[in-house]
Image 1 (cartoon, rainbow, N blue to C red):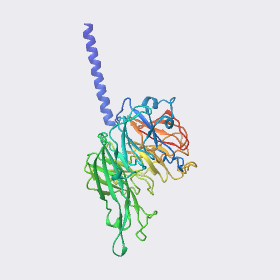
Image 2 (image 1 turned 135 degrees about the vertical axis):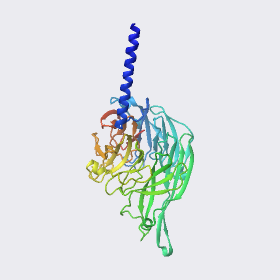
Image 3 (image 1 turned 60 degrees about the horizontal axis):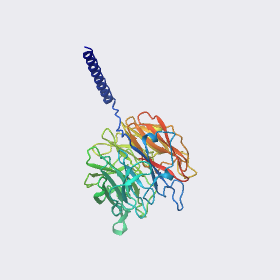
Image 4 (image 1 turned 180 degrees about the horizontal axis):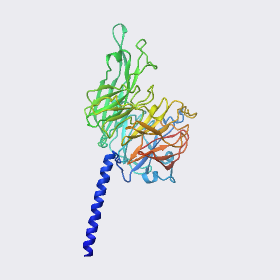
Length: 451
């Protein structure tokens, strides 16, 4: 009899638990908040950029890249201390290597930047500490994308990397040397990250409309490709320049066109089409990191740089066109002027972390660069909050390449140039900050990302 009662009570409790769990699940769905994937036992790879040895200046990163991997548990432990520059693994690259990581942190992908091995792609198994084991073939893409290529890993299950470049634009004239246009040849290359091989290369001139070209506007650089939700288009950011039609020389001071991107078919890389925003008037190429992300709502969010009205985050709909009804000014969100998004990372549920500087920021006497800051932004409400961190005039994040997103945790390495710092863990939902492991620095060096 007692057994029967026990079974009944147990089943009743189990049934109640299931109802409660289901109710919680429905509430979660209703709130629109779901936790991004958590990788148990993942490594946090810290990257450091070394100051150049020949005529080097602090923060230039021209002396190469050193990486060191730390467990999540140790990365969160403020009692731990790591000397990455002394004990890390040297990534083959003449200057700062362009790094990407697999979504679970178990693999590190690198393309060497400039020098004898510039354009060489390599892949490593992350094993903790300085243990990075080469795996797969070395692939040099420099003949297609140049010795200093721009590239990004797509969020397609770590299958594909896309490298892009534009050859030096050429001034084209007509009868009587009358100015017609300036164009370079764009090269778009897809890398099979699983098998370490080039899977596709396409080359073409990318035209603007006649009115824009006759004024001298042209695409100077491509960068920061991202895959759309349908998986059939790549959106590639642009850096625009202008030729003075009267002289044929580069015109540094000019009125910028609306922000532009190039859309190509995927995976064929065919049919380049230029799309234009009427909200942003800056470039969309970023610098050394991702500059556009696919949001949970199926739209792509893309930052601008060199925008006269301060950086914006633009939205590209699932029709692969700019949604000009979406207006997110970082100046307005933060109450600053002349904001400049140096790098950023989408963290799920419409939240993102942004590294930025702005007009009036302190200028470092060490690097002659404007001080950097971090903010947590909400793409849905178009709001932003500056994060309460130990800032320093020598904090320089312009060359920053990577943030780790693991569940609601965002891992960031934060240290002024040449000074010790820490890993910080930021909750993407509420901005709560946890102080993690200490990072030992060396004069002139800086930390360039977490992967």
